[in-house]
Image 1 (cartoon, rainbow, N blue to C red):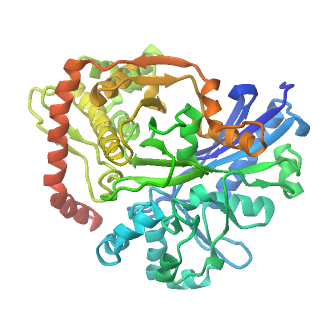
Image 2 (image 1 turned 90 degrees about the vertical axis):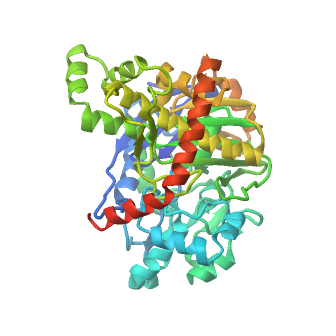
Image 3 (image 1 turned 30 degrees about the horizontal axis):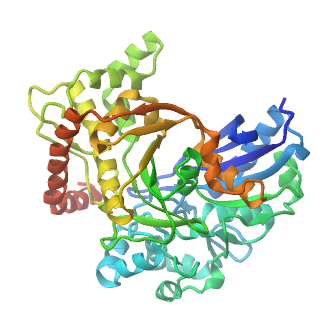
Length: 513
């Protein structure tokens, strides 16, 4: 039983929704997660059932309040976090006309390429801060208009997952500035929908949610849902922001120059800027948080999912051994990689099994082993894959440095942060110290912090830094940094030389060849 006043952070993620209960100074008191699938009816498609996600929100909050006997009056506020780039169509009565198209959906490759080549995509990016890529709702909406014109015309509303959840809870269509700034439809300078983009798409602003800041407070939840979640209908619900920008708050990277690196299923590098900042080459994103806080960064498609691929497709032996020893198969894979020196004895891996976002924004990029020889064994491939993930992170970090200047502090989180070996590898590649903060559920914690800030109980988001201790710190090993600098140059040249070949093989794969 929990006796104190609490904040609940809800994080609506790609594979699960988590409800996390926080006490004073961000202490995690309880949590509950509900998983759901990604639906892939065709190659390149990635959809989810919006009803499943809404039900997951209700179930997660209800489970955590009931299991820990949290009374409605104990819940001071609820803060929301959600994954970026989702979009779906609703009819006049709010019924879904489509499933939710999520960030991993690549069906709009052709539309994104056309936007870049024919519609001055770089200028759209500079206004909106969202790179032109199939992940973004802008090319997704263009695909819907061209491929399903009846649905596009019938749609009364186009909304994200968080917009839909709030509609179900409150009957109102609203969107926070942060998630809106990740759509490609939102101007950074005016904090409003971009009329030129809307005109190009052929939709009016009346078909999009009303825009509000991240600190906007909702009250008067429908009693049916409040009762199922075990909270008061009048509990303040702070709309919050996207999971990426909130994760920066959740790890304490909240000042200009401070960077957060997350490697979970995918990966991301993000830093704070005091004003909207875009890249003349279009390599980085810029998303809103709160006034004076803008998050500049870049996501990668390929993080821990590559180790999962190795484990599932080539690690039957390791899974069996790990089961007998009672250890995690990933720990066994990592131990194999530790046997190999930096550089994997001349094996370089381009980790683009899922295409790539930052800094290349190339959905056609594909995974590549370069330098493979008969002397290479299983452990070399494992190490090369781990190094490839880190190379992709370094490429994003360098692009961000060009835009915002040097990174003064780097904080790391995500599944990879559980591995001291992998953390040290990244420190060596970056040539910079890494800090591992004692934090859990960074996006949910960021949502809780914004909720407290909205209620006036947290004067500054920078105070979140005082909530967490450092659990580890890594210093780069100079001899390794020199090796990786040489290999990173090779990695970058390989990508440039293979760009046209990636287009050819991706087209071949799409044709079922």
